[in-house]
Length: 367
Image 1 (tube, rainbow, N blue to C red):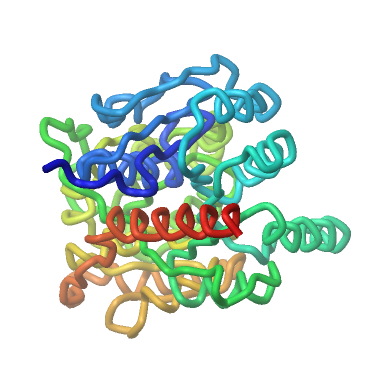
Image 2: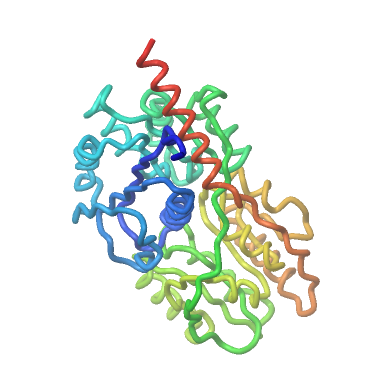
């Protein structure tokens, strides 16, 4: 006897590119999990090239729009109407405008929308006027999203306050943890001790501040390696040259599986202005590597829960950053006991939520 068809049998998810962002990395882990659990998944992409292309599971269907801009991605609404999925998954804050557009275009024909909150809702990079406009935009979300997923309890609390989201529409599901990538290459790295940064070369990450701090550190028997790729590469390379740090600061590009380098590093530094739930902090602590991080998200203190795990400094406090790095990079400093990552059952938890939201929609339509 065949098993009954689950309510959310067909899931549509989308992303602009596969350039290596954390939102897209987490999305690919989720779609793989949903496919492995027997669901049909369609992934709509603006552009299918990029370092994450190798991580797209062969079992899922892909639709390539050929236009990765937000305007080009507007045809997501037409694709959604054409293939009629049971649920539409929005993988992060950056993409919620496309969810809103699809809802507006399709109206009652739009499938239920489940949106993940992937980034801080209170942003230090916003001026007063933009912050007010952004707050208004956030408060529109409960009008076009059926369910919201936060990656930690503190982020759920922030969504309740900033979005005006009802508690019953908020759910906490961590991202699935990073898995080893078989056959992944490791770039050539310098001998000796490493200070490591992992993330896109993007303005939000403020790698310029980490490079400045590295140049001021008392300890000189170190190399700084920043793994990732992005449009800030040329500016960062010029910054490294101006400080005379060529050969001591390396930008090796995207790495499919940074775990071996995380395990080797003396410490991991994350110096962003804002973050969601920084997965790289959890990945570092999982292999017993201490972290130095800015207070860039309400979730940071949920991860760095004890001084034995690392240090949290204010964004932009150069002296505090240098002091924290010098503290953790003293030779012989005890490393943290590894901290297991959450999210092992993330894919299944999402499927439970998808099934419930589809059933709720059917009940409402039948009433």
